[in-house]
Image: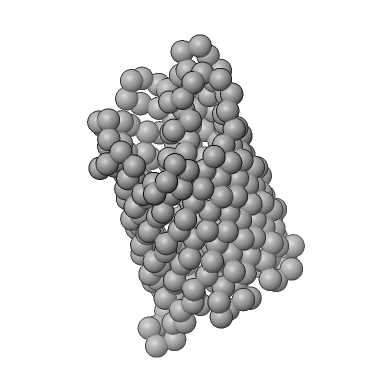
Amino acid sequence: MPVRFNLAPAFVFASVLAVLVGPAQAEVTFNAGAKLSHDNNVNGAPNTPNQLSDNYLTLSTSAVYFTPLDDAQTRYFIGQIGALSSAYNKFNNLNSSMLVASAGLYQQLSPTWSGQVTARGFTRYTQQTASDSKGFGGTLEIKKQLSPTVWVKGFGDYEDSKANLSGYSYTGETYGVNLGYLPLKDTFVNLGYSHATRDFKGATLFVSKSETLFAEVTQRVAKNWYLSGGYAYGRNDSNLAGTAYTNHTVSVGLNFSY
């Protein structure tokens, strides 16, 4: 069963966007969130009768630093430190946590095009010491503003994770696309697709592939508070026969940003 980590990308993206259009000086935002999710197939069983479901709670917190690098406010340095922890209701052997630090550069390329490149380092802790890991990664994002309320963003990501036991170590690539929409001033809709590949470094060659379709709606309910709800469909496969499976995840979250 792969470890799941989610830093509430829609919420973080909305916070980043809000700061980038603000005054031209360095700023720091503090974010905290709680998300309750239900996964119908936490054990990754290929056959429906063997699939086990569970609820899990994810708590996250982060501090994000922004500073403009030019007078025109077209280039920003962005630094972030964060932590999150997931706790399962029944299968507490899946409990996990992560610490992450990242730094990146945002660039406005034209009135409607922008890009961002980010590097990160992380440490993961799980219930199995052998799968505890440290690693690094990088992400490249390109965004096109289609209208004042609609945008599309493509991204590519690379990650290198080294675990205490080599069989849990991997290198991986993820790419995908997101469509963002602001139907109302305080309502954010995020639709997306991603494809991820993980090449594990054990004695037996094991390559896993996953595709995810998701939808999430975030609503600001007070000055600094955001309520979100989402659904994700995942399809997972590998180079080993009989390991393909699907899963459905629904979630609701509450986030605070200051």
